[in-house]
Image 1 (cartoon, one colour):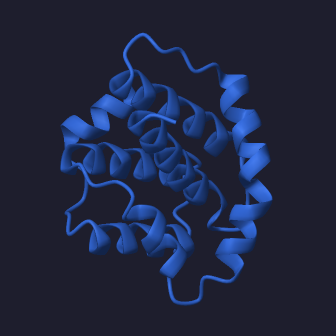
Image 2 (cartoon, rainbow, N blue to C red):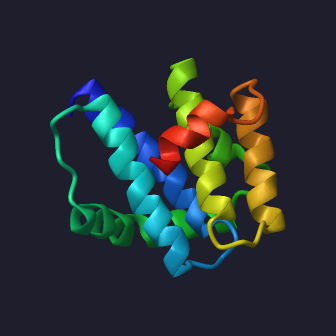
Length: 139
């Protein structure tokens, strides 16, 4: 697996956690999850097409493992570990914008989602995504 492939795996895991952190998987969140993965993939690997079904298959294959890890993550060590895999500051901001987009796409901001964003901000020593980052995820 190339370094870029490993980075995309890390991004996908973080965004899957965003979907699953509130113990609910909503259709709107899955649409935004797929859109975010496609957008970030195109930025990291121009010309490499990642079909929606491939993304959904990956999610389904990882879902039970992620749910189990979240259930045992009382101290945020799992969340911290997956967030630490993204080291590029620019990519961190883009992923943070995607996290935010997934959290708000269903018009409900759950406590677990807020807590995950706070962990990301702390781990990445970052502020909230700026409008340019949000526009990238919206486009």
